[in-house]
Image (cartoon, rainbow, N blue to C red; front, side, top):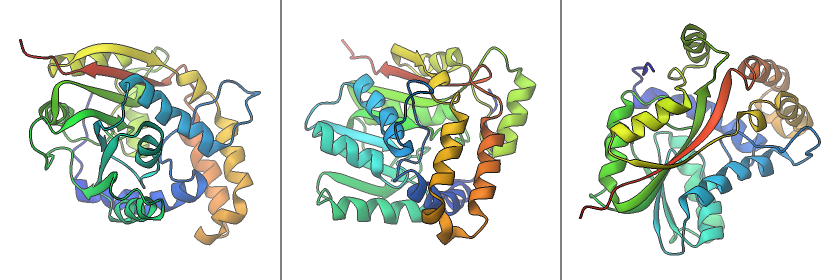
Length: 276
């Protein structure tokens, strides 16, 4: 499982460029979507909210808990979490665009006292030990220069008994390591680990893994739904140029080409042990 050496400033610039499109296309959910099958007609943004809600459910979030959204995008998941659970959420990002949008969304919904957004790098979190009851990382560890360092930081800022959920791509049985590396290089991320790799990484960092779910068929197995959503959003996306939908469709087909037998999507939840 090779890590890429990416400067967080460069990662931030990448999201400065891509997140405006995701914000319009996916209503602020800058991550994948989840459908129950081909007959499921749920809109893209609502299907993306299902990922957020699956993470919420896995973490077992409760009112008043302190939650870190490590890689918060433009803030929509953090806001949904705050509204639906009553938790207090701190989101971090290395994208100036995302930070500005997230803060504005919280202000517009009068949630700026319950939801806080900061510019911060998860490699060196600016929070005291034991600051949070839960941490979520939804597709945000893909460019971590050293995954071990990030997981160590999560461990540090969690209180004893605190929980973490990682939701991210996985390399599945049909894809060789070489093919996974080629796929990762083409989209500028770390080589996707297997689900077992995620479990072993979290365990090696001192966490106790409690739950893991593979839902790649309902995420990466729905290429046409992503493409159709882009086409249906043609008017909204026109602000990014007349050929944006054509480019987006081509990009989506390339990205989704491996299929769910080769690229999966896992949620892995673990707990920081309580010292006795």
